Amino acid sequence: MIDGIIDLEPLIKNPKKNVEKQMTGAKNSGGGEPIISVSGLRGVLGSEFTPRVAIEYAAAFCGEIGPGPVLLSRDGRTSGSMLCDAIASAILACGRDCLDIDVAATPTVGVAVGAFGAAGAIQVSASHNPPPYNGMKLFGSDGRVLPAEVGSRVLARYRKIQQELPGEGWAQAAWVGVERIGKRERIEDPHSVHLEKVLGTVDVEAIRSKRMRVLVDSNHGAGSILAARLLEALGCQYQILGGTPDGVFEHPPEPIMENLHQVGASVLNGGWQVGFCQDPDADRLAILDEAGQYIGEEYTAVLCMQRALMQRRGALVTNCASSSMTSHLAKSHGVAFYRSKVGEANVVDCMLTHGAMYGGEGSGGPIDPRVVLVRDSIVGMAQVLDLMVATGKRVSELVGCLPSLSMIKDKMTLSKTELEASIGKLQESMQADTVSLEDGVRLDWSDGWLLLRASNTEPLVRLIAEAPTREQAQGMIARAKEIMSK
Image (cartoon, rainbow, N blue to C red; front, side, top):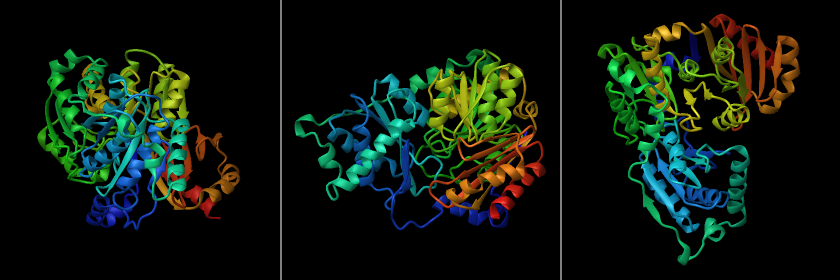
């Protein structure tokens, strides 16, 4: 079992202030550029992220993908519809048809790309960020989040639009003329194909026979639509909290422990067998056991992998910031295990390179290639229920069968350059069995590991340690901080 601790001191000192901060946003932005990665962008709406930014980024995306229509979707945020209208205008002006599936989970977008023959897709979502934020997530024709190679080209084209055409922007870069404007088509049910694929990975009749009692917290995000259809198909007795996907979050949207105390109480008081908690775009899933206890997002992909290994054999992949439970699981079943850099696109790259049977991230994101190469909370719910039925075990019992580990996350003020300059001191002083520089600095011992990664947007280094006890994990972080501070 993992004892997860993530920056809890502010919550303990002032829980009300912490919740208010998460709900309203961590800063008052005075403009500037949104946070941009190879797979998309996000920012405070009306400040860092404006309709013009959305239009120009969409035009850049259209200029770097193959021929065909572009699929467009959004999570339930109140600003999503307005942004989709702006983005659709760019898609049409680039001479492409726009297939609009409206509100849908991010993994549903990945499935729909293939189902409807799209050249790519744009999901309007800021994932777990507070309500003032929104963003864009980009998908290729293979239904996965854009890999670095394509995403870098999109970003370069976006920069060119900004720098070479000030005041005119995307229009001169992408406008095809009135006679070639694309058409916008609404797809009424993009969810059924995704549902069918998920159901194909589990024993539907066995689950139906147990009439499982399930509480789902969708928190007014996009996941409620397909979650309800899934649980109906599996014959579950269920309740969905925040089932209207309107973005009016009832608690801070990230599905982490400090945000889910009330949901946990609802699980316990309602006698539910399991609680499932989604983030706004439903690619992450946290799990509460039958007592309403938060077991941690690290367990979601691991439990799904455990069920998969009961049926077949194949390699497993997680990123270098995820729990060692996956490597323990792989070793116990005699299958290969690989680590990637942090980030969904990197996990998928590693899965494809090694022909992996299953992948995932410790942020609650199982990736089952039989369904889609995208983190998927719907897959997580179905396969955890399947595991419970197949083993006859409650969630707490399933967790109790896994290695007992403690993971702690912390941070310190330090630049990326300063981190790189300190690597030699870390290696010499901490004497790890192995050292990896693939993504930051990862030090491994036989009984634990420590990862230090520099932020790309702030002078911060994030530290993650995992060990058999909380004290050991804390000791690793304290020692690293001491070395770095010198």
